[in-house]
Image (cartoon, rainbow, N blue to C red; front, side):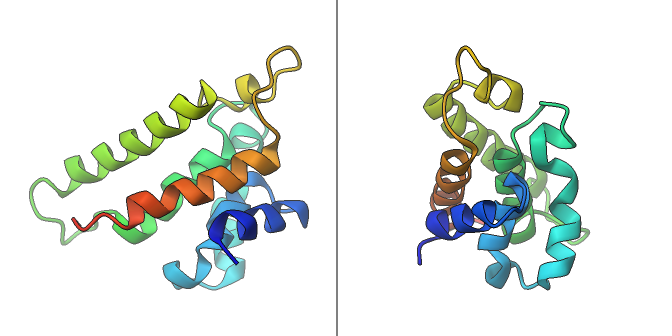
Length: 135
């Protein structure tokens, strides 16, 4: 099953948007499901229901951090490389949907997509960023 379909399935099972994207990459991340669910639980509904950054986007960022992020052994430039990757992911999502904000994406007068679609596409977009050879 591809990552997008897998993430959408998790969303349809009742996980929030962030959790659904993160769970689709659980095997790659290597943490148990319960730990991933707790780590990503605060980001649904645009960060705890605030309507801020879309949970699917937060999920993309969490997965990118887990798999491509920097840590205490980082070399000079690793932080900038990772932030550039995050900005590129945000830009690609914004190009497709016009916003990163949950409240804009779900607005009654201009809703751009269903949460299931956002989750599916965010999980698929991640594949490009994870396949990059650097870091």
